Image 1 (cartoon, rainbow, N blue to C red):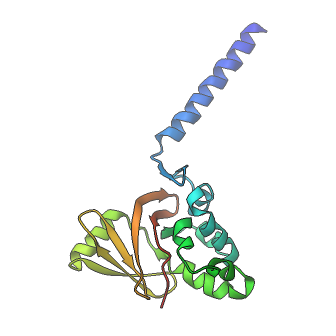
Image 2: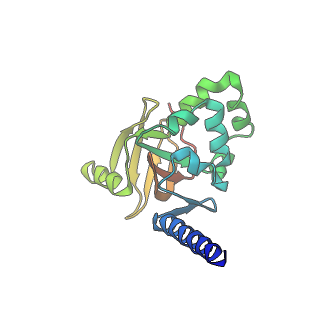
Image 3: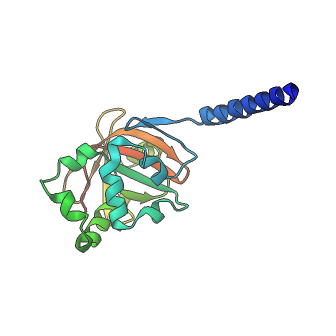
Length: 187
């Protein structure tokens, strides 16, 4: 009986160690106080970020959860809670109302580009465009990227607002997230 218990304990320890090793072998990025795992999709990771609770609530209100859990790949420029807080008072509360779902969906899909664009890909586009490039968003409208120093890329929206990317290349199972400091607005 003691041998059986020892064997069970050893097997349990080996499985725990193997499981931990598998999780640790994934290259993670910390966002909003949580590790973002490349084996999880965009929504699964965003749910854990304390800095993206407003974005997650908006994605749910717009009915985009299934889309962002889809195969992709997608590049998501993810505004933080602080970015949403910069909007005029009451804007977010108004946007998440059912009657404003179309407007909210338009704004959120303006933050998504089909395909996976890591920093190196954006830099290539910027080099080819002499410091600026245009991306077509899932919304259908253009979004511009521009150089702002050697390792800083900014986004310019249809209304002229500029967002800085604060965290690049947060790998996801179905794409990549770049964290931004301003909510982008389509024209």
